[in-house]
Length: 118
Image (cartoon, rainbow, N blue to C red; front, side, top):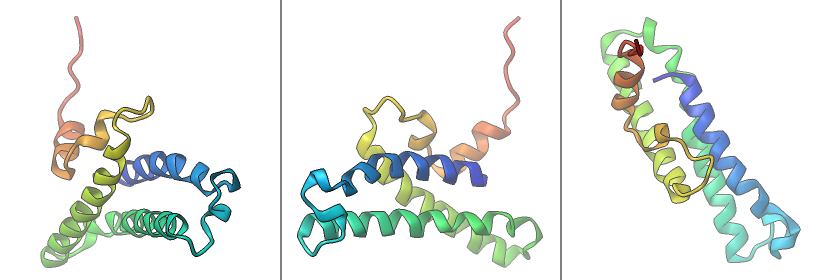
């Protein structure tokens, strides 16, 4: 798992959410006190909080084993949060298979040697 996974999935979700903060939706850019605005803010906050864990990925290599386990669990949990949100748009043209995978599957997929066609 690397930072780019978090950056890609966050960008995908943000691209779906940002237009919903437009005044054309009637929610005053998502900053009013109506339920739609509140839900939009809550969802955006959840995405930003889950994405923030990407800062721990770089510290994993130098962490002691106990801390490394905590980092791994945190990264996996927050990836699952983002994955669950992104899958709401699974039928979108920009949705990529990576967004369906569990954190450990991403590690396996990117650690496996590339198969070349001959």
